[in-house]
Image (tube, rainbow, N blue to C red; front, side, top):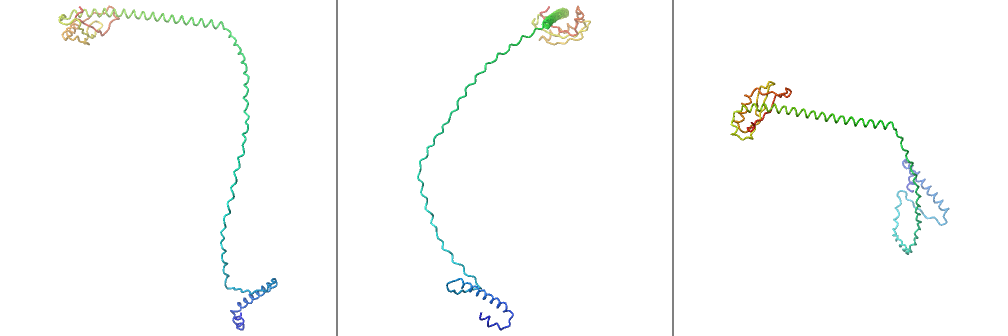
Length: 247
């Protein structure tokens, strides 16, 4: 403050704001002191305000360790209350329902007979039986005729074949006593309707070549062969069997 007073007389324009600021600060301090004096009964104490530094921080408060509270006392065990079992009322068994008596079934009425229809059915059945019997008789008759015709044909063929074999056997020039009587030679002979021999082929050998050759020459020598009594029995090819014992 003395510095400000001493230099008041100097005309230094740079000091004017600082002087004004210092004056204002002093006025504020004086006002605060005046107000504090009026509201205090004790004599005022001097207050020193340093505007250029902040006051030091207060010392840290001592840390007081708090003791944990004592554990609460354990409660005394109390006897468990008796739990009464609830009385369960068993349901009553339902009474069986009375069985309903079955109603008697109505007897079916007998169907009315259609006499005309029954008569027609009997007549139709009888007619079918007659037709079946007639068809069976006709079938049996046809079978009988066919068997008779086959027997007649077979007899005619056998007779015709015997005539041919007899004629050929008469032309065989061979000593039949020199071979076993049971040997057999079979030839297929091709004929014309006139009985002439076109060809003779040995189907089965008798086992004796000389006897087979003698039969072959006899067949060719016997041409023309006998014709059947019934021309309808003629066959272009015949199977002829020759045995030494057949004479």
